[in-house]
Image (cartoon, rainbow, N blue to C red):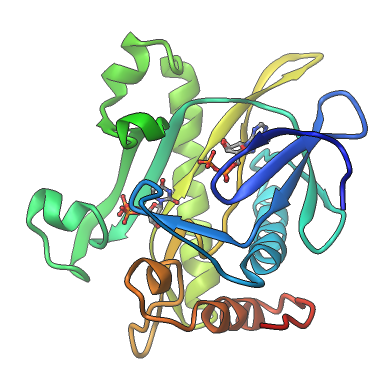
Length: 245
Ligand code: ADP
Ligand code: UDP
């Protein structure tokens, strides 16, 4: 457990200074929030599961050649990561209609989309993370057109890869959220995938039963969140320490 003073405490993670310049430590908490943090709880073991699952997915994404912030897992709840300048845009990828797009566009949950949809939201809790267009991103200077092109290209490759990875273990990847940032290298700025990829920011449905295996178990008071995340880890072949409820 890191003893440093936190640089930032978010809803699900705490960020500490890393051991070397340009690094951070990302600590996964058990806190669960939904509906812009109006609903809150602590779910024992969730942080450990997300740490291990995100490590597995970030490493696989790295092997695809998509640069990301992950360096190593240093404990059950902590990862060493590269310190990025986070681009304040949440990139949401949707393969199947679920969550906020359903009431927004009058869609039925579970209906297939004709093609993969990439949406952007401003990362600002005080404004409720409003949906924005690429033009807003350019107008307000959150990212340049060149940066957004890289982000969308990486995002679509990650979606193709993860869709296959999950289908191979009997899970449908319905939607997910990514964050990106800028990493200062000797050769200039590199766009990197940041944050986490876990059942906290993906919708994952069992391919046979459509049972929810993600944070919707908390959002909708379905119970069994830890068991669902453990099942995702088990199917991915990720070994997670025993979690005592
Ligand atoms: P939130 O800030 O939305 O409550 P978290 O609790 O997950 O979210 O906090 C993690 C914070 O760390 C997020 O604000 C995220 O943008 C930020 N972050 C993730 N990866 C990096 C990184 N590599 N460098 C700097 N900040 C990061
Ligand atoms: N998501 C997320 N963080 C957010 C908003 C969304 O991780 O702040 C993820 C969410 O888990 C889902 C996808 O992005 O996998 C689409 O979420 P949606 O817009 O439907 O929002 P929500 O249902 O969370 O209101």
